[in-house]
Image (tube, rainbow, N blue to C red; front, side, top):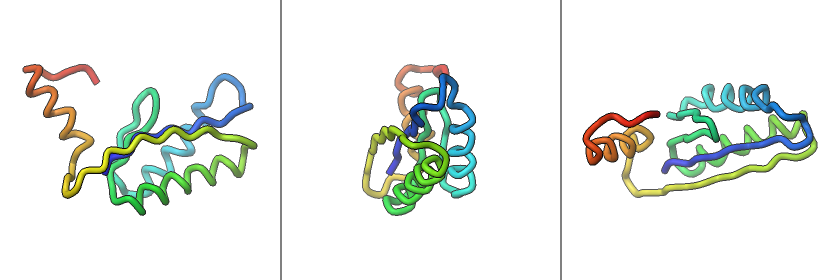
Length: 101
C-alpha cells in the first residue's frame, strides 16, 4: 500500500519545517520507501509497518507540542509494489513525456 500523510503541529508559529525535519528523519530511519513533497510525505509498505511509522512520528511531535493534525490518504492494492514511482511513470507514459515533480 502507499500512504500519503502529513502531521501539522498547532500553536508553534508560521514555519513548521523543524517539525517536518524531525518526522522525515524518523521516516528515513524506518527503511520504508518514501518521497517527501511540498504538502506531505508518501510512504510505501505493509499496513502495520506504515501505521506504526505514522504513530511513531505522531508520538515524537506530541513530546514537544500540545496538538497535531494528521491527514492520511491510503491507496491499498493487493500485491502491488514500487508504486511511489510506478504510478507517476504510468501517467508519464500516457502523457508522452516526463512531467514536473
